[in-house]
Length: 347
Image 1 (cartoon, rainbow, N blue to C red):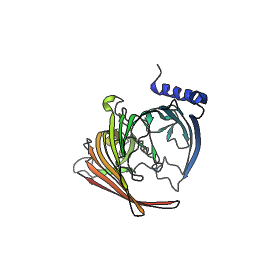
Image 2: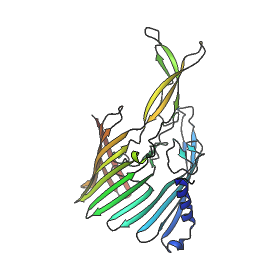
Image 3: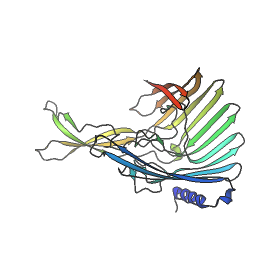
Image 4: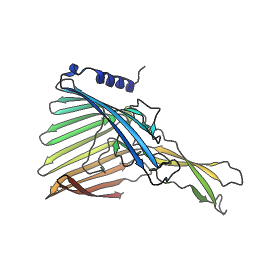
């Protein structure tokens, strides 16, 4: 029985290879890119790190207008690297739920339909909200890829999105049936938080403390099941007013950042050696509700933009909090400068 991702992949390949005349002389487009990057570091903070790493990225994309109201777009990405952050056993991944990047993935595959004042999009897509630069408290519908914290990559999700337009107002609603987590740096590598290699503890009350060597293991964790009951949704209202624009949004779904819970097991060692313990890291995922607002305007030659979001947590280990960011920007010809400040308040 073919799986959903294999059917989508076969459809993408068919549409890729189909002759352009089937869609009209100018309505079918395709392309691609080949990108190679490398990083060189001055030191190795962890044993599994390297002084140099390289990545190759090959992308194919295609899009076509089936008629005046219906069109589609598909993108397939291939990746290889020298440092094994890419899982070379996954060459046709559609869900993007692994700890490592897949070697091959359908990164986009969606259909667009235009119905007068309403646009519909169905399939794997990116949905971005917010107006601040780099950090967006209201942008919560799709996860990030933080394997390389400086890459600022996003992970597309399977979703249904509707956009409605009325005068200078824009209404947006999205439903994401299946959860996709943010991909975090890998345990023991450069961008994972530094963990202590030993700890000093007392084996019993009143006993002299001893040093215990620590080792770690990331067990991942059960992701929210791919059921409609675990679906996520969001709505956004955007309004243009004289010299400004603002929006109100609401999101009900899962936090894309996992909470790490630890469990410790003492390891058997000979008496003459120091005690050793294995610390297991378990990833847990909790629902969250987020109400947000953002705006953009101008003060003389300066642009001003800001966002604020209130996070209503169900995670018992996380406090409800308010995040907001405000920024000023200025453009001189080809130069652009922006200054931003972020604030947070816990309840």
